[in-house]
Length: 213
Image (cartoon, rainbow, N blue to C red; front, side, top):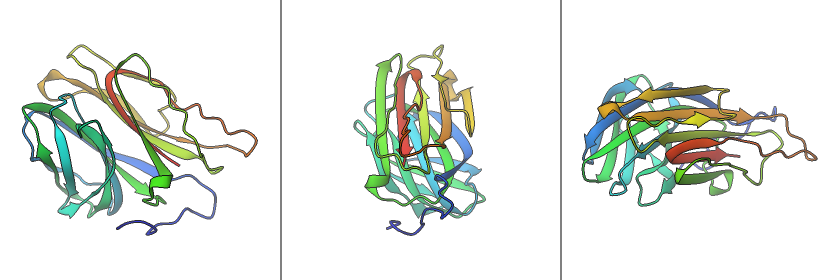
């Protein structure tokens, strides 16, 4: 529905991303509403979400009343990324699906110059690993960007991001004392002879990433 609506800039710059906000809840049973949070600037947005419980199955996300399209779903649907148009301002993010009692966090980014075509992005998931090294293929010369979320498996866990600090990088304690981490970065300065793919390393229990080419 959104394919081709935006084109990449003629200046050969990568996709533009801008962090908006993060919110978390405990004892979540879907559907669930994150009420009165920042919806960013009016325009296009990517919503990332992560849940610790494998019984969670997210089937839909809406922002400010607008239904979003799925970009990438991890496992049975407990983590992933969704894309659509936000009215901006303040409003609700509604996550639909099924779950038992769960802990869940959502992260919102405004995004420009992104074409919703499966050839333009790749999702990655890791659980119970010390590091997750991403080496995407098919990188354009104008660069690419990456979005990431993680939730360690216990209240004392933490996440360390590498090469993920150009836009925003933070660990925070969410609902029920559970730690989360959300980060994003843009990789630029490539040439056809030097397609480096050094992106990031993650330490954590459950991680999900989206690389946009």
